[in-house]
Image 1: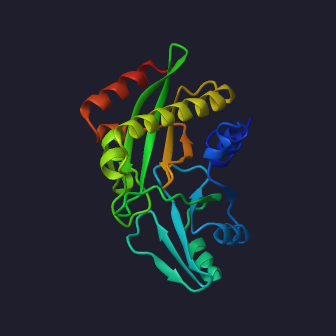
Image 2: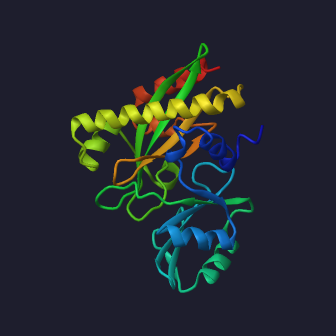
Image 3: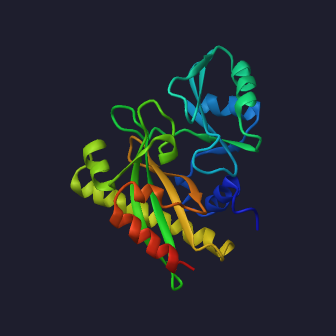
Length: 246
């Protein structure tokens, strides 16, 4: 059955579904060889523990040229630069969490000013049916790599995030929100039969410059802090559905 806490196991399970496959960023176990290979394909990648939450232990590696790279942790404002991937990797090993790590393709889901953004879709099983408990946008502080509240991220309503921050018109914004919810429900319909005792999931979704949606990960214990920071009404709804979820 696999470990539900494993990001790689969950991504592998979701990737088996043809409707979800193209919405999952490329992911590999962390090795120096895999890191080199991924950075030849993508301009930046994330290094993340396989079973952590709240952005703990997260790093980002950027490739500027074949001989210039940078490394940033979740809490770094300024990156550290390296002229060889070997030296970067060696330094990363000194600072990473003592857990198994993964490499995930980086997605430029960001505002025109460069702030990283994503959307959390929270689903709960109420009386045997999955319902959308809430949907909220998250915006990272400038020069930060993570959007969650523990990293200084700000909770925002999704519609103004899409229209005011990303420049979507009304029709495109509502269509994108509907796509996010449908994609999340599809993901939960795939993963929940494998783990029937779990009654809540939170999906983190990014949007690239072409409007394509990417499922970064599916959280098995989605907290309510992101909604509490948005509004009291949204938080009360999450708490109510959390008590009803089963």
